[in-house]
Length: 239
Length: 214
Image (cartoon, rainbow over all chains, first blue to last red; front, side, top):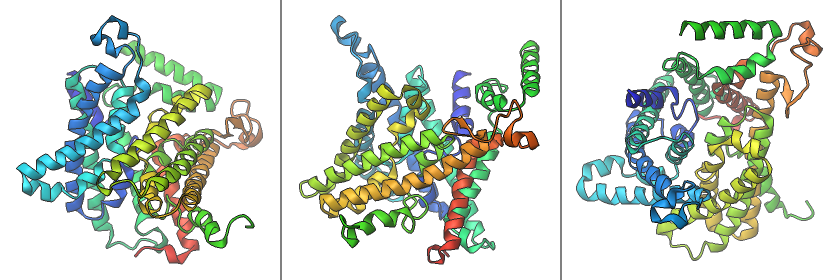
């Protein structure tokens, strides 16, 4: 159950593109045609599935406070977490190179379709973002980390596929000249992100969203905050 | 521009408008959108990028003749990562609350496309002083957009600027709120960042027809 929940959450609720804006640069640059978008999306899933679990191991056994205790008692209070950026990015850059070499050797057809995108991926924010979120959300086991990597990758894939398909169609529409190209893509992505927000309450029954809403509730009038509180209490009681 | 020649001045001024990294070159959008719900976070993020891009461009430019082109991406990543770690530690030491708000987005400066994009496009082929100016110019262009977006989102979303209420008190119903104005909580949500940037692009391109794509 935990796995299904995380999987669903990483694809839809915390979608890389629509909820956290990761990998926007390549998302905007490579989404002019569906076929190239599919290639890049597949490469992102592939690389995330490898780097997130790998960085999880690094984080667990090298970087976290107290992670070095497997070396012996005297290393137990070392905290190397300030090195995580450099370690993560080094892992990602090396893995991307390795994957490129391995794929080229064993599956030339896959290499031909992914090939040009792989080097691009080393500097895709979605990849480093995946590892950094994995660290800050304290994902518990290696299996869950793999799950998170694959799930986020699929979420990104869906997003770029959708926008590429929309951009292919919108070419036939009469968009105001100044909005053509980049401008309209931004606005469509914004609208899609609003759509994806509707997934927000699906797993938690809206409870996790509560702290965010508090901010807006404060700004509203006193009466409505009271009402909100009563409502929130009612929800808790029914649960 | 007494200090700078005309050509050097152009390096700084161009990215501010006609060659803006976000709206024209489409670089560095990831972090630009996620942290602009408050003006303060936008400003701190801009300063961080200014620091990393300014220094990083100089370092890469100094090393440009000794980096083998095959491993240049890894070398660039290491340089950026080192600078970003410095920024992150400084933020944690002096602005802890803010570094919590920015969370992973400070780390994501490493993969901010502006930085790698400018390294590749400029610093690898130009001297240190010009690269420094280019870095500063592009970081300022990035900052302009971030600050505009942050300004509107905070003003319309929570009625404050830098945390100071400017439209009156929504609870006591003073200022604008006394005539029935309400904050638009929607502006604080992430999709609005995209739409605000879309509108900036629209305004900019209608003013300058040369930028219109077909």
